[in-house]
Length: 262
Image (cartoon, rainbow, N blue to C red; front, side, top):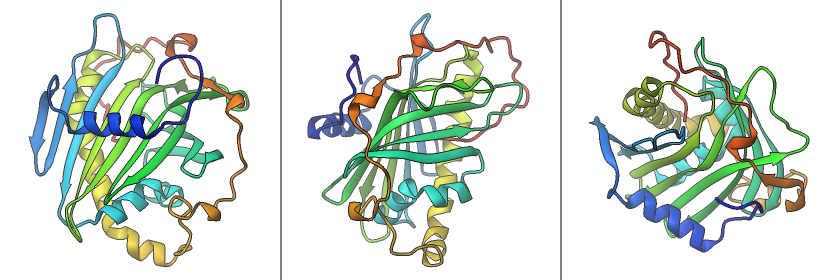
């Protein structure tokens, strides 16, 4: 998303995101093993924006279950071992909200957090969830964390049959912190495939878990169930990376960094 005004993505924005998920032109394949493929785009000189795409073929998970798992914040707290804190701040429309997410990074890296405007849309038998960073006055950057910036990040889930889907994760992110290039490279080669497989495993256990935890509660499918307060767009503004403190982590050595988040 560009410009200063916060906007809720329209059909054209979802179509553009889907097209980029499907496009392979201009991308370099960096990993292809065990049903997971990763592509990346080179960092521009002097820029810290990282662009990555990861695709996983799931022959044991339906698109509907994958979509539920990606949405279900209570379940994420169970399977996402990197999460420090995650919560919804408020709703904008029936298919858009604002939320907070923080995750642990192995020392000596600082932990990260992000506030995003998230929107979602079923398209036929496929689903898209995407987000970008916003600012909210009640949730300023924390001193003990680095606030990352999502320029545009999200998932596309494509149904391939009753128990078969393809998950594509597309991320255009500025992690801030002047990360060394080896960290960015490792995230593409190692951490992204690990995180995707972790999502797949979470999907296999979701139906049993959900039966014991508010089985009928799915506000992403039934917006009338939401209890979130409404937020006016006027309370939000675009989070630009340039306005955030940039912690220098560029001298870090390559030992010990092994976080696996998406």
